[in-house]
Amino acid sequence: MAMGQTSGGGKSVRDVMSPKVATVSSVTFLPEAAKVMLKEDIGMLPVVDDGKLKGILTDRDITVRCVAESKDVTQTKVGDCLSTGNLVTVSPDTDIQQAGKLMQEHQVRRLPVVEADTVVGVVSLADIAREVSPQQGAQVLNKVTQPGGEHTQS
Image 1 (spheres, rainbow, N blue to C red):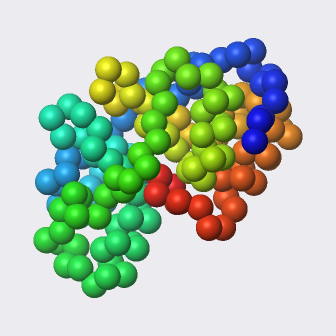
Image 2: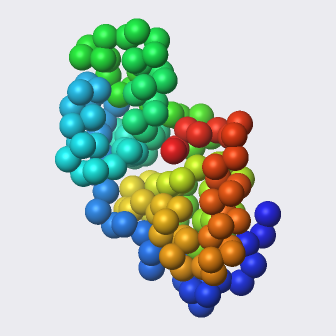
């Protein structure tokens, strides 16, 4: 669903993304990843192996794919419960309207920003909402939070 004209004057993801990105590798144990999330006050970590994005680990992944399945989280590695299917990313040059559309289509709140196979930032629903009209921000939020979506990059 189109978001319409932004009040941000055609800004790109580069203009609004968070460039500081904490990452973990697929062999990191879950408690260590959770400590990174706590320290950085975030709910999503890009999983990077050999400099390339392999997936996304969310606090929800830890809860649903590990704790709810009674896995021993102290012995479970990130690679055992990260989100890999339908990984949605944007480049720094992606228009914020397009990023918002992707969030709506895939019902995700955050997108890794990738340039030359390297994670260079994260753009969030809040980053987009600050740059568009209140109506457009509400529209994106409404679509992203509808029940039944992928919720893999929440």
